[in-house]
Image (cartoon, rainbow, N blue to C red; front, side, top):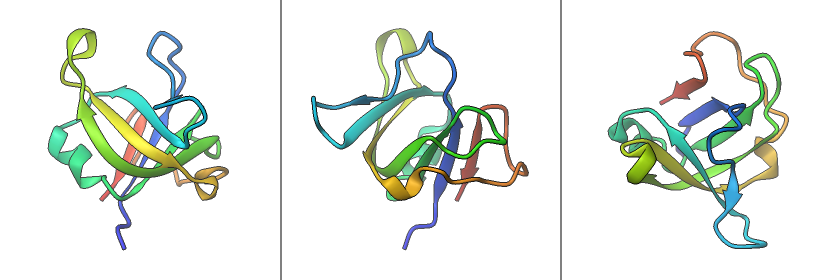
Length: 106
């Protein structure tokens, strides 16, 4: 079992929001995150958690199915494609390990 996980602060309204890949789908896209592509690939199969603040429990999340590297305006940034999972909602993580808006566990 892959125990990889990423916790992200999602509070920048100027960036694209978490959206389903198709209306009514439980598969979502979330971008655009600045990290190494190899790190993002290592997270595939792991969980993704979205928080409003580091100290708050997650409001949404799921299992990462794949990643894409953005082109255009956000070129090089990572887009996570994930399947929503209710068990990824309401999850807290210790403050240790946070770097600004993300905490990666590999």
